[in-house]
Length: 211
Image (cartoon, helix red, strand yellow):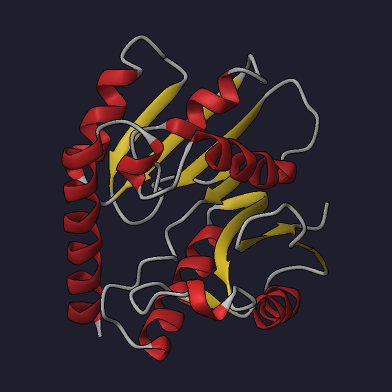
């Protein structure tokens, strides 16, 4: 089982390494269509963060650190950890924010410390030939990682199974939002929000932990 997971993570790292080489530090370089969609996506995910002067955040699958740049425009004080399995992504992020002492970037498939919040954006979309069952097992194990490394809550997004059939692609994973909402309610917290009203073929789930 562990070898299968390692193979999966290696394939993910190779996939995004190729994307970054082709498109550079742009939304296309992390397999998104454009900047407008990327910003809209970040806005949904960051609804997990309660208004406060200072907070810490783990960004799982951080890519070249675009979420950190988004957060900087809204929050002066935050402790940010970016985590990615692709070495080239982490190198790009470190170069991009070399003067930012409140940001750190590590090569890994999980955070190395607990933060107030954790976010995962786009890491469940490209299943790279895995079956639905294999990919769902990976998704669930990753949600456990987000939960275990967040003290106040976590957020993630997925492509939706309610997408138009003619636009769906075999190499992408389309999750059932109702099933994941139920999973999060039963496994992680009573306070769960499902956001499926922001105009993209995806949804975002916010899991708020009890005070």
